[in-house]
Length: 241
Length: 289
Image 1 (cartoon, each protein chain N blue to C red):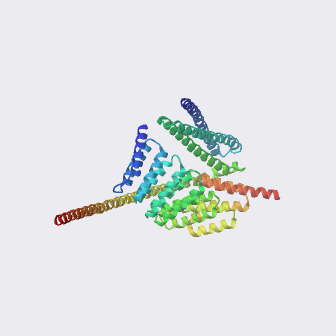
Image 2 (cartoon, each protein chain N blue to C red; image 1 turned 90 degrees about the horizontal axis):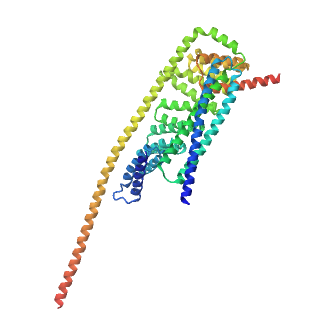
Image 3 (cartoon, rainbow over the protein chains, first blue to last red; image 1 turned 180 degrees about the horizontal axis):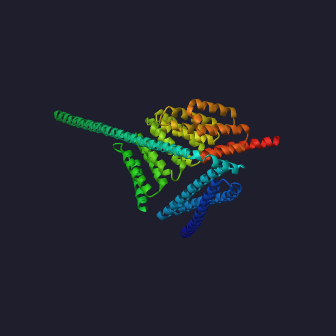
């Protein structure tokens, strides 16, 4: 009975693991094509000229692929939960735990990557949608024709602004370093406090010795009383005889 | 890896045994804390993040019994870092405990830092409401400790997410406040036009032309050089396009600005909202005629 149950669980585990690996392969392929779709969206967006039809077509296939990846992720999550229950019921085995942790890590990575690509595609789509208009040709001609003398200066100023942002980042790093040094100082203060705690232990030892001393003197007193009583009894007996 | 796991479980069992026993000098918590620390470290080496997190929580409880509050808080932080890989809710609750302990011992700057970390966890989980709450708390604590740069960073995050949640007035107040502070700092004054642009975009989202005009006048009073910048030109032209209800002009103005300075995704999202409102108004007008 028990062996049969164990075999059933083991075969269930292997089947679940095989299915998990298959879904992981599918997810990898679909995430790659999803990323390529995002890149194509970028190329379509930067052109500004043919922004009439490609967003609609790209939007349809992009949305359907997104839903596909979402459902695959949910399925993989369910399979991981099933494998976790199988591992828990089958008892502690190190290799099973390692494989389970590996699958969980893979699921986490895929989720993060899907979320990142989705964010990228969303921002690109919004960008293209914001800048599309019915007067594209006229605007393109006007922009490219008349704005070229000032473009150099404005681009340079933008790069200077970027430098200022980088300086802000460096200042933030310095502040983080200062915070870490502050926490180190707190740790050293705590070490000093612990040394004080160690000093407080010695009064405890002293009180223990005091207690021992009191007990010993009490024993001495009791012994003296017993000896005195016996001596007195002996004297009384000798006199009465 | 399996070897680390076995050692970790061995250390944990020893620690539990020492806790359940009777300590002559009252140092059983200290010995158990050492063993829990070794156990948690071995769990981390074995990549068992859940068990490492729970062991760090036990370590924190031992340190609380020993009245070592800083070490207890540090153990909670370590537990949160372990749970970050598997269980976000546990991670947040551990950081919350660490923040409470740091507040008790008066280390507000470290409390602010870990509040910011909680906010970043919620941000990565796309939970914007909670991220706003914790960024606000973090900004308050940084301000209490006079760390204004970090406080302003947290406030900018609050403003950014508030705008995404369509609480535009709040975003406007925060951006204007940061711009006002930055004006008095020689190093930061060149970023003022960025903050004022963000505030102006939030004003545009409120869809009130009079408020936009008043805001632009106020910004000129704040920063006399703002009226000569391209950011001011963008806001003024967009306000004019909205006043005239002209979507083509709106798009033209934004495209011209974007060809020089590409808009980031936050500005794109908000301006897209403005454009869609404008389109709806234009269609409504067409229907009326």
